Length: 285
Image 1: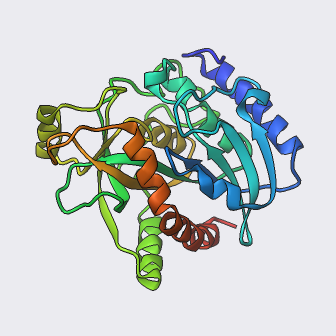
Image 2 (image 1 turned 90 degrees about the vertical axis):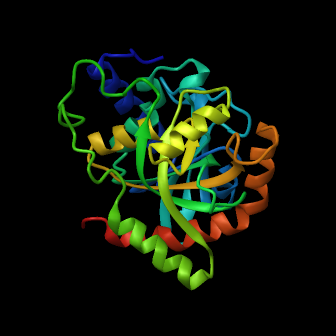
Image 3 (image 1 turned 135 degrees about the horizontal axis):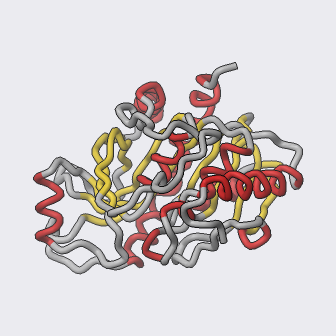
C-alpha cells in the first residue's frame, strides 16, 4: 500500500505501477476510463484487450465493492486505444484519499492526458428518472478530505490547482452533440460526493438539494481533483441508478443500483463509443 501523505512515495509507486501495466501491452493509450458500479461491462467490449488484475499491479488498491471487477483493461474502443478501470476503490472501504486516487496518478505516469469518469448516483433533481444519464458540470465535495493533503510533489502538479473548470467544457459540448445524433436524452448537473457507505437520509437529501446538488454519490470527486492536479482533462458521466432518499417513498438498495446499470448499459456504451473519438481528436498533438 502507498504511503498516505508522502507524494514522493506516490510518484515513485505510480511510476512502478505504470511500467508494469505498459509492459503487458503494445498499446499506448492517452485516454483513461474509470467504470463505476454496474458500468464495467464496457471494458469487456474492447478489442485487442490486455487484462491486468489490480492484484498484479504494485501498490494498486484492491476493490472490495460489489460490481467492481478489479482489473485494468487496455484495448481499443473502435480505433481509440484506452485504459479502462473495471471498478474503483472508495473512501468507505477504508482507503485514504491518496489511495483512492492512486490509479489516476498511475494513468498520468502511463502518458494518459484525458480521463472519463463514470459512476452510479442517486438522483436529487426531480426532472431525472431512474436510468437517466447525466453529464457532471461541477461538484460539491462533502467527503471531509482531499487527495492533495500533505507535502506537494511538484512533479505531479501545483500546490494549489485551480478547479474553476474541473469538468471540460469542450468535452461536455462534444457529448451533447453526440447524444443529439444518437437520439439519447442526456441531462447535466452538479454532483455531491459524500463519504458513505450508508445512503443519505431524506433530511440530508433535502439539504443537498438546497445547496445546489442534482446528484449524490460516494466517488469521483477525489479522482477529479487528482486528475486536474496533474493537468488531465476530465469528462464525467453519472447513471441515475436510483432516486435519492425521500424523493420516492421506497427503500434504497445496492441491488437496485446494479439492476439499473445493467438495464442502461447499451445506451451508456453507445454514448461512450460516440464520445471517445471526439475526446481523442481534442487531445494536443
